[in-house]
Amino acid sequence: MVDQAPSGKKPLPDMMTSIRFDKDGGVEIVDQLLLPHTVEWIKVSTPEEAFDAIKTMKIRGAPAIASLAALSLRSHLSSSSAPSFASARDVSDHVSPILDYLQSSRPTAVNLGEAMDRIRAVLRDGQSGSAEELVEKVKETCTAVHGEDLERCRTMGRLGAEWLWNKRGAGKSGLKLVTVCNTGSLATSGYGTALGVITASFEEGQLDRAFYAQTAPYHQGSRLTSLELTTLQIPSTMICDSMLGSLFQHYDIDGVVVGADRIVANGDTANKIGTYQAAVLAQRHNIPFLVIAPVTTVDLALKTGSEIHIEQRPAVEATQIRGKNVETGEIAVVRITPEGVGSGSEPWQGVYNPSFDVTPAELISCVVTEKGVAERKEGEKSIDVSTVC
Image 1 (tube, rainbow, N blue to C red):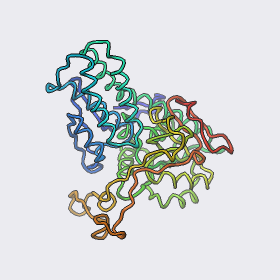
Image 2 (cartoon, rainbow, N blue to C red):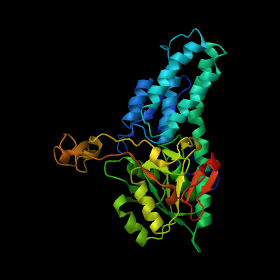
Image 3 (cartoon, helix red, strand yellow):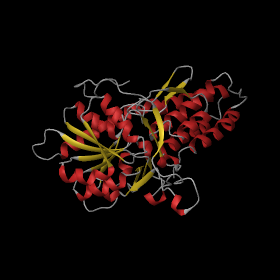
Image 4 (cartoon, rainbow, N blue to C red):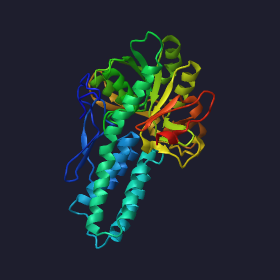
């Protein structure tokens, strides 16, 4: 839990968390498909269960996905049913396919691949030692993947909030900030990335109001953001993404802050579907647009956003929605489209449901990581993100 501002100026209520684990390797996650109405912790004891939780979006957010994948491997290696290894090579032969399997669960989220590569490096470097030593090093690395994320988030939040405050208009006593999807403590190991900027601004007494865009009725991100901001008692307003243009016309918005699932070498950024149109509208209205993400989200191996693989999600996610019956209080799943849509092969039955879109760097004001702020220079169409890696 995080209950104190990095500045120490304004304590917050306890933040939520999506993952918890114990010293013996046990892992539990909040089933985010049931939020905000039901908080249910479920055990994740194996890599297979972690794969399912990531694939079905019981857990979401690129940093949190990486954390769960790593912790599930730690749990696997700590369990009583873990295999015995005669050599370091045996450890590598056993663990490597598990890493490949876990990485395939969400291909767009580069944090997951970075975490798995980090463990692969431990396997390579540990071949000269004993099996027992290598297993311990792998488990330590798995724990570090999760633990290091929290401090990164706190640093990013502070840097992003400071940048926005320095860019504010004359006479501004508080910022009006817009965010897309969920980038808070439920999507990370705590505090959050883009939502961390909003939280840091609030802690410093520099936030007027946060607006969070509901990218689509079937995406859970805005509902999780609503839950987090309510928990933290931060003044906020939910809007539909189709209303962003109207909001920008009628409100003096000071910045749009978003997270990322992958940032490539030229600054192009993949994030939750709806981010691109928010960036287009922000540029039209001369509103700063910030991408907030840890170094682990930056992928310098890809040159432009056209190389990013974008997941197509199951049609059912666009045709059904889970919610609470306002009369009975019961939780129900309801269909929001006509019968047949998304369930057949006819052209009129199709559903276009990408998880992410790509925002070109020319629409982004700056990229913020825990290493600093990379600004796009006036008139340029790319951002040198290598300066903040």
